[in-house]
Image (tube, rainbow, N blue to C red; front, side, top):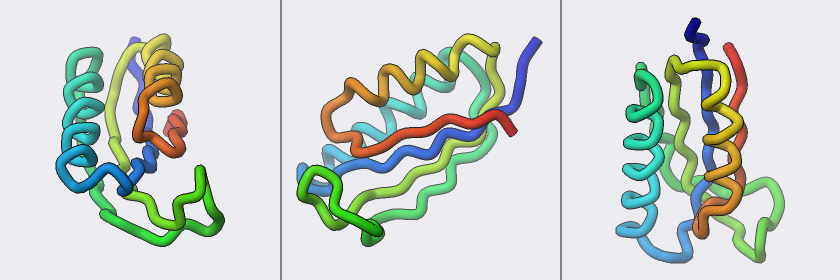
Length: 93
């Protein structure tokens, strides 16, 4: 049984554009490996509402995907331990 999910990931822009694109591709490949990526909504660099790790800007990416119910928790776990990710949240649609 598969469910539809949305992952919101805020990446650090302090490491440069190359590092941001590499992280975006890493999460896209990870989701594609464990499910089906339906849409990638790339908001780009935005000002944060409050400082996170002394950073005032972040790079926003939203992934809409379908996967097995056990994968979203693993995706959130990987995002939280990855350097360059400021915040990550996965919700079931």
